[in-house]
Image 1 (tube, helix red, strand yellow):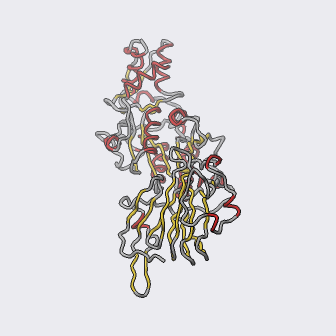
Image 2: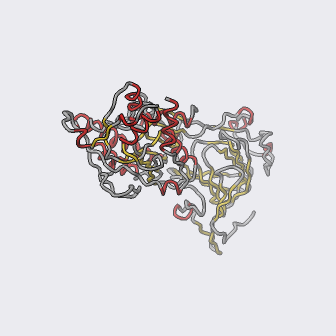
Image 3: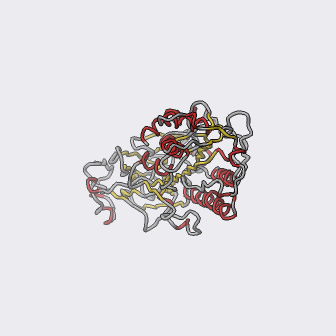
Amino acid sequence: MVATVFGKTLNARKTPIPGLLLLDLPVHGDSRGWFKENWQREKMATSEIGLPDFGPVQNNISFNDAVGTTRGIHAEPWDKYVSVATGRIFGAWVDLREGETFGAVFTAELDPSTAIFVPRGVGNSYQTLEADTAYTYLVNDHWSPDATYTFLNLADETAAIAWPIPLDDVEISAKDKDHPRLADVVPMPPKKILVTGANGQLGRALRAEFGEHPWIEYATRADLDLTSPDLDAARRWRDYSTIVNAAAYTKVDAAETPDGRAEAWAANVTAVAALARIATANGITLVHVSSDYVFDGMKGDAYRADDALSPLGVYGQTKAAGDAVVQTVPRHYVLRTSWVIGDGNNFVRTMASLAGRGIDPRVVDDQFGRLTFTSDLARAIRFVLDGDVPTGVYNVTGQGEPTSWFDIARRVYELSGHDPARVTGVSTDDYFAGATAPVAPRPRNSMLDATDTAAVGIPLGDADARLREYLARA
């Protein structure tokens, strides 16, 4: 029998399998026995230790009578934190996830002074080295017949695990003996990414950015009603890692009508609150796209991400409320943007059409901001998901000198080969004078400060360069 090692410093060691962490646990002992903190969230789920805050929901104990009892190799669709309560085990872990490290192997002995964090999709197996051995494991999901499980044969020749006690001499279940060899294993797929609003301008850009993959789901309202009271049961949400909410009610003026107001609040607040609740309950990262309309436009310079919200109209009020809800999710990104242009009806396409049809428009010249193209916004979203970007609120807009809608209209005419002098500037008040339908108040200053965004590496496009590219493809 090997004595438990006392006096270690809490530490996590990386292994050849990404995300598989071997931990040293401080064990305090004397002649009476020993004591340890087996799982301590505030100490372990820190950047210094590197253990994720994986949100365990169940604690299990496996007791093993005899030396040589061998279990596995099982890969489950959840994370697992394993530690020894008494005795000693030999552990073997095999990466059974899709990707470059599929089939990678790591082995180690565990006693009460060690533990291991096993990420979703990594196969785990244990062989007891002492009688009366018990090990415990925390998991962050419950077993489900609808979940995906993956298995590997303990005697697989490719993994070639050097079992301390030969498999012919140990107790193994018939099920474990019949598991497939590595060549026949169906890899554990990655958790899914859900993109809502897939038919919108941003949704189409996200499809172009991320591509078509089995683990990416592009949902329209017809596929998934975010306002449904049954949304919690609409998916097995534990299978998702990320929700990118590109769905929104964006009819700014219609939102000022009784019906529009109800629709705006349902889409921009009620639906967002449901997604936030689901994300929080299932450890999902929620990415939410917001708007310059959360500000009143009275500030003398560009708005920072942490400036106080002060929306003017119903649309802005619903977007501000949605922002506040999203920020209650432990892993969230709120990306505020302005003047979005993409594949669909938008200001640039309207101006290009007017220019080609010989129409000389009047365009407001007292609202200032920057165009943001959906290709850049989609690229920014991918960056925050792929990179190590701190959660929070970020301004994501095109870069360059601020312009008015009048300036942009003239630039579209110029780039389309038409005389920009055909465009006439007009104040917002004069433009909407005499309107018979409700008109939403617009922020006169829609400039968003993206300094903090650039500081964390999120890519930002040049608004004028993107405009030239956009019109060249039109």
